[in-house]
Length: 258
Ligand code: NAD
Image (tube, rainbow, N blue to C red):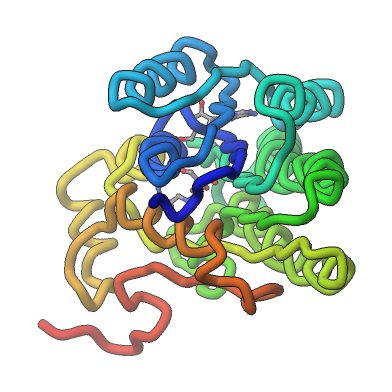
């Protein structure tokens, strides 16, 4: 018995990191998975992994910041697998030119907000009605620990976009609570994935970040996938409007062990 037997899950950003790990785990737990990414080749590679492990999945290329693409990806879930029960709005970017308010250009701000915040909004806009048609389900929106903590190495657009994801998730949870649709945010700490390692591109930068993590290591995409599985499954049936901080203790720390 899988924890997601009989469920259809759509995962954005499924071509890499958290999205790929979640697609693999959700399929192992019995879900039929729609793997969405702006990069079709990586989404297809994720599907190949799922299928090779005996699971069921389909790849869809979509840009989550596009209204048309967001509608199409949800339609693909209903057309291919007959419904939608889990919507994991996980795609996100961290732009290398994102900095403080002075340094960050309008273009970087707009692109980051379009993908990280509007993308989640659009996923909910089309995903929630589809879930209601399927009798309810669970929305998981990927925020970040930076929605809680400021850093002296700023990325204002990224940080603001993640604050938006948290607030949006809370409100939609309240709105849809009586329709059997739960909405929660997953807030990862710093992870050993493409996204952060491209930004922390020297050993010194990595160590500077790790000073703040009580566990003293980066998190793994698999560890986020396990938390997402809990939120996706009926194990979290009384949890909505909440945030799952999976961060190695970073938001709890004032001073970390030497
Ligand atoms: P990743 O870069 O490994 O994967 C992100 C995926 O999203 C990529 O496959 C990329 O092609 C896809 N993507 C980017 N723009 C897209 C778009 N417009 N439409 C569709 N797909 C798009 O990153 P990850 O670490 O797995 O991050 C996943 C989520 O977790 C992001 O929302 C990120 O902000 C968040 N997060 C990551 C960390 C970290 O340390 N890595 C920490 C906190 C939160």
